[in-house]
Length: 289
Ligand code: NDP
Image (cartoon, rainbow, N blue to C red; front, side, top):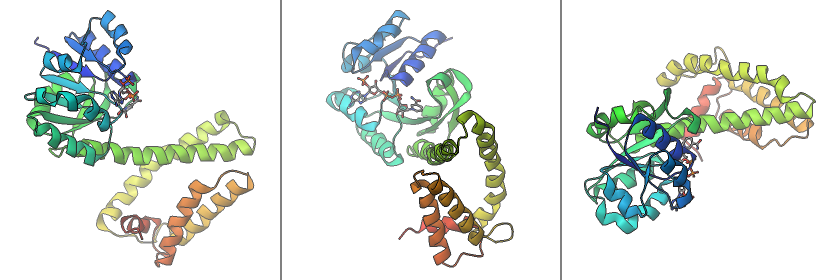
């Protein structure tokens, strides 16, 4: 089988995991990292460390970027931008949809094509088909690389717009960070009351794993823009969140996180949604001011 030779730029935990998996699969892998020492372990496994960025780029048509953000890409590629013509860059660095779109234009102006990637797993998930990465950009580029990329994780192609992979990644992170901080907040209240993390675990898991049922129930209503107060009312939500804030306060725990939730609920109440479902808050989020 003809495995595409490729270059990986960026050898943080993620880039190193990707390089390791591709080497194991039998790809010829050239690597480059700003801090050269990070290439040593991979070199011992058969990777070819390039001594300069120019050399790393000249070595292969296919280049994977795994950098902290897109600014790091410009810092690395700007000085060698005349050598990018004809290259395919799979940009697996996370950033905003806007940054991904700008980068695709910047690369296109230099004769290169970008496939944006949004990796949804930590380094330990690399090399596992059940893991998933969002991709977006030119479909023909994705189709041509699909098999190679599937060595890293499963693939989920979202469309032509280079910003889409970043967008799907960010809306997932929107849920992830708010939820994980809410878990930490609840744990702080639990700890303040003598409940350990281990004791809280089954209850935290139960609450969190009940959420998909709610999301599924409310999705058709949200799609229709309907927020009937038949199963829940914002006034009930207001009282409930207020109890959460008071329980945290009584435990001596910071209340800014549930306080932000209470604030959104209050704005919904002021706008006259007391008898609508809490889902009416989507209107508050869509129309800040
Ligand atoms: P790191 O931030 O640890 O490392 C990425 C690489 O970026 C390093 O090799 C670093 O070089 C390089 N870099 C940063 N700034 C510059 C610069 N100005 N010039 C040159 N090189 C630079 O990231 P990870 O490896 O953890 O992750 C890579 C990407 O994958 C990130 O965008 C991250 O958000 C995403 N991701 C990470 C996950 C994780 O769990 N780690 C999970 C899902 C996505 P140097 O070694 O010289 O500092």
